[in-house]
Length: 198
Length: 277
Image (cartoon, rainbow over all chains, first blue to last red; front, side):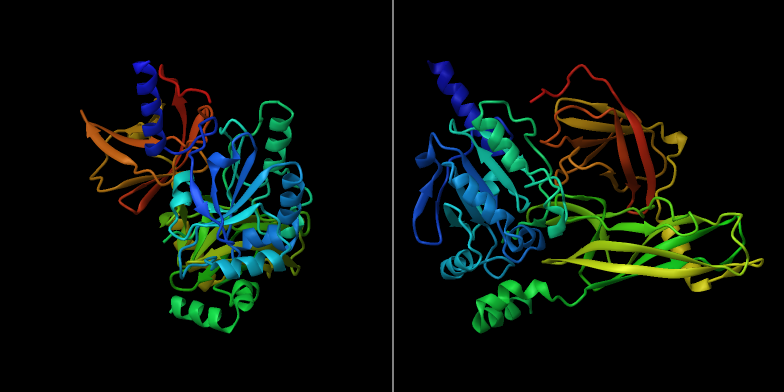
């Protein structure tokens, strides 16, 4: 029993020191969304969770919102019971920083449909997951393990015209994981703008 | 100043603010330069893509690192020829709040070579053209696009374009050179790091490795230089995304922020392979 405890302790220490890797337990967090609601990863146990790092001014984010691609994915997957959390880690004064009211206006204007948009102006959640770019995507399975981390798709450009021929890694991971199959592409280079941490 | 502008923007309209990147002031320009304005058939010219970038703005190397995107040109083929692959001057490391990127702060010229077919008649104007897209970043990033075009007159006599020639010559100085054999560079792999080992050659105040391929090393990790028993080592932390070792380590090694060399070495098998994940 003591051994088990030690191993668990060690595992959590490792997690704090090293970058998050696919297969790891996704670190738990609590964050507040643009409507003032609190969300914790623990409450979504037994569900797939997608984390989408977001900066509404970033050309690579705009590619997926101006085209409607991200909204389409949000609707598709939340319709299948997936929890989709958009995360904004831009610091005040930096590109992409929004107040709650500005974000709510944006969500409505863009017809976006995440489960919630988490406001992370201190960058705590971003650093916890090692989010590097916008968009940087994470997929967590119902067992709380990270099953995909990286780019949204395989076309690392800001061009809307590249969406149609792209392989969407989030869709690929969710399709495979939901079918009980191993995820074939588990980690890629997240392309885009750097996250505008403080 | 940026913060002030953002505040004004927020006051005026949040919508205008979020849409500001849509009509950006260009922060860099690009143009083609050719070292000879008149060239003999059957010879070659050097072609440069000259980027002029605002202060504090940068563009990216062929491996942009943790964010960003390298410039890409789609050459148009004329008379059955187009310039060859790009040669990239050695980059610098650029830290962001979220990682480390590789690129060029300030102006830079990327190089290529155009072979003039022997069959082209003197008196012909050969167009050199391409569609360029690139990303320029400071605190924010702006995608840019340009149709670049110039002409090369095929002639019986050569005319050197002195301005272009000096730009290209300066850029060529910054293209990584073949690795000196005297360095005896080798690469090995341990559990979580690659190690470049090489013989001392002159004073090494600093040495940096830039990987050609994405996701081989942790870009933001310190590269640790040590010297033991007359051999120099540079430790490169493996990327967390690396599932198995590549066969070769390819990239650029820069000494003292100045002398750059092409690296393309096999990675010696090691007993302690990184666990496959």
